[in-house]
Length: 311
Image 1 (cartoon, rainbow, N blue to C red):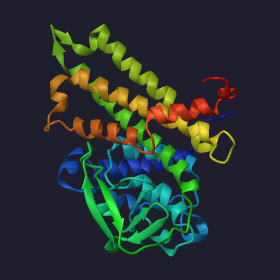
Image 2 (image 1 turned 120 degrees about the vertical axis):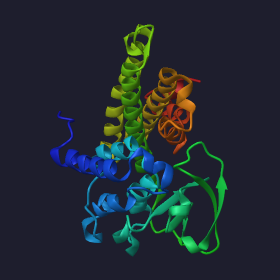
Image 3 (image 1 turned 45 degrees about the vertical axis):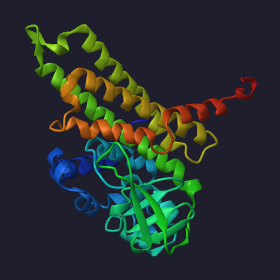
């Protein structure tokens, strides 16, 4: 079987990459709350999963996987997954679907809502409310570009769609973003290892550094196909296992990429002046979003044939 992405899928990713390079460069992360959001919305990205009949592109999640990687590679702020992936299923049938992108959606199944301060609609559990009917309380978090909020709804409506359909897709989409984050961290670490010299040569020539970077590259290359598989099998009996395998592997690859980036860069990696900190924080925050690696590995184990035989 041919598991390669199609020309159309790669072209969409290239469009997203070009838009974000132009409108969401690293320096914009320091100055703007949602750089590149309006320009990306103009491409139709946020309505990609909305059915044709509702004014969207009518694509499937697999079509969006390479583009979602690019949003992770660019560390794009804002509720990207919630608006582009969860909203078409949570708000199924509502007129707001035609406005996705211009209309921003944050969602929390149970717990905190990401970037709810930017949202026009906020989903909390089985209810949805407009922003003027939501009270927000900032919650502590590691990611300055993915702010978390406790939400309380002062007036709301019943959610027309289903978390059952939205949650696995949001989980896979988050895994795709993690692959993009990990790729950026690896590229940045390799570039620094080539440029930084010590003992008369680049630190990338040291065997220990080569091995660390190679381990990251292998982790990414093993995780990326799992994300694609999960996007393809959402309607199959293996979906639960595949979604959890993808999220666990992508989260662990991104965490390894972050740890290795810090080791390669040394103490400078923690500093405010270095843009690396944005991707470190994004790796940590998205690794925890929609379930961490330990939680998803437990699900994979439970879904394996004969799992009941093991304590």
